[in-house]
Structures are given as structure tokens and as C-alpha cells.
Length: 156
Image (cartoon, rainbow, N blue to C red; front, top):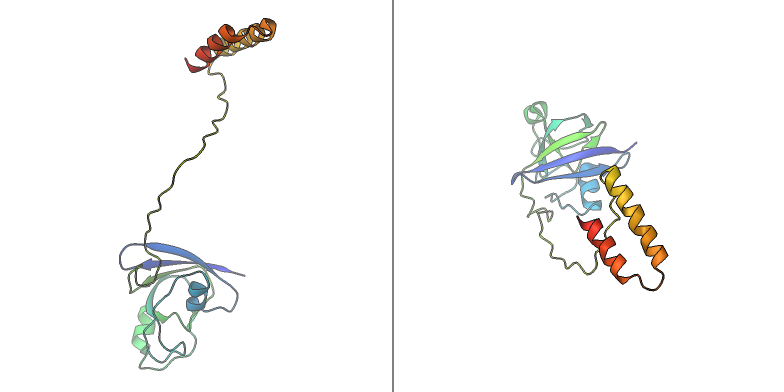
């Protein structure tokens, strides 16, 4: 079973990831393009120390220099060792920019717009459109004046 993990960065950005069964939070984040700071991946350095705001997890194995018993009791954890047992909310003590997941602006150009046909807003509009459609059909090749009236009726 996979779990959802909210990563709250110190600059206010939040990213959501999913972990696979038995996967550490750090591995899940890296797999999804978020580079949580870490050095050892063995629970020895403490670089990936984070605070678990919500949820349950297996803390894995680590040395006292990386995470003290007191810190663990307060809710601190090592993302390189922890494996989620429920959905989690983690406070990451790094900015989203450092973790390469900062807010990004994208520029785009609209090349084509394909508007949906709007439904008649009232019974009167529906009757007016049906009458104009009949006039268009009856007009045959001389439909241009009726078409203009029809378009004017749709835009009013």
C-alpha cells in the first residue's frame, strides 16, 4: 500500500509525493524529483533530519549523533531511514529551491481556441435559435443574411 506524504519546506512551499511499500521518504522524494538534503543515506549524519507533524512511521536505524532519543520523542526523524506506515506531513528544514522543487513560472502562447457551443439560456433563446436554424436551412445558397442574423442572435 502506498502512502501520501506532504513535504512542507521552510519557504512555505508544499509538495505532495507518494511512497511505495517499504520505501524510505528520501527515496520516494528522489524518485519524484525532489532532492531532500542528505549525505550518508545510512542514518549516520543527520543532514536529512526533519520534523514529522502528522502520521506514523518506522524510524529505521540510526546513530545517536544523527538523531538523539529526545529528538525522536519530539517527532524528529531521518528521511533516509523512515518508512511511512500512514500518510505523513513532514516539515523539511530546507527551502524548496535547495530541494529543486521551487515555485516555477511558465510562459505559454495560445495558438488556437476551440470554444464549446453554449446552451440556450432561456426558452426564448432556444426558440429564436431554432427559428434561425430553420431559416438558414430554407435559405439554401442565399444564406449569408440569415447567417449574420443567426450569429447576432447567438451573441446577444
